[in-house]
Length: 104
Image (cartoon, rainbow, N blue to C red):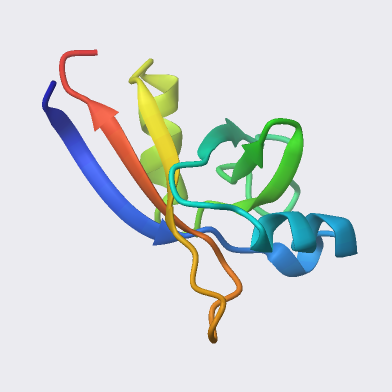
């Protein structure tokens, strides 16, 4: 299957998580599936996209990418987000690869 879009980005906003949430985010491994959930009730950004692993929030899609991701979710595109790599040296935010399947 080909992909319409492949985007790599750091999941941001870990400082909004409690200590358990930050520890959980730091323990993520390559290939972990991340669910992207629009947060229209977010008072700071109605286009915010929250990132979850299971029911645990791990941060947000960066604001500069959120409008595009939001539009694709609204359009019914199939988005797949996975932890691509997580480097603990100097990096506290998981690197995500988000793909949008073509033809969806």
